[in-house]
Image 1 (spheres, rainbow, N blue to C red):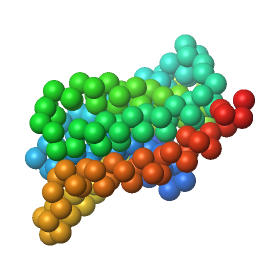
Image 2 (image 1 turned 30 degrees about the vertical axis):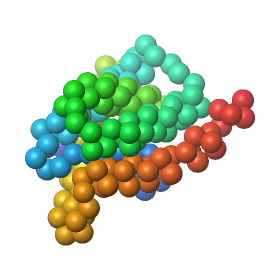
Image 3 (image 1 turned 180 degrees about the horizontal axis):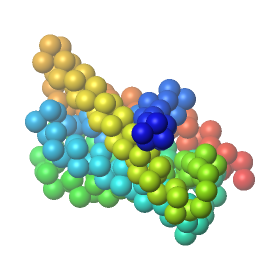
Length: 197
């Protein structure tokens, strides 16, 4: 049971780590257009991210996929930017239900990219054969899922407070938060090691 908590906690910390705020940024970009009544849709998106993340770790642990770390580190903020731009340009427009497929694809893709970014560290902390790493990997994935639900709940709560008490429209909230995410993520892209060759 203590081993379960070890890997569960690593998953939890992986999302909630202040130095690894790219994960939280993506969750903000993903969640801003939704409210508490959309909780099922948000839960599906969050679970898709976890699925992608876990799939990437499995592929990496079994060395099916090996990718250059600098490319992955560059792709992570790109997926955040795409999500934030999408919500910036679709804020307040009808047809949000139809756009779930696009957002779902980006979420799954981001999960895979982010999982690849974490794979080297994850492989280094896991002892034993590749097969022995599957259970800890699932425990880690559960920690990620719980941490993401915490972050999403906070974003939805802030959204509720801002829209209810400060009379922000849903569209304005989405525009402001998407712009904020873009403003934070652009320097990450510009400062990427990939540009230095």
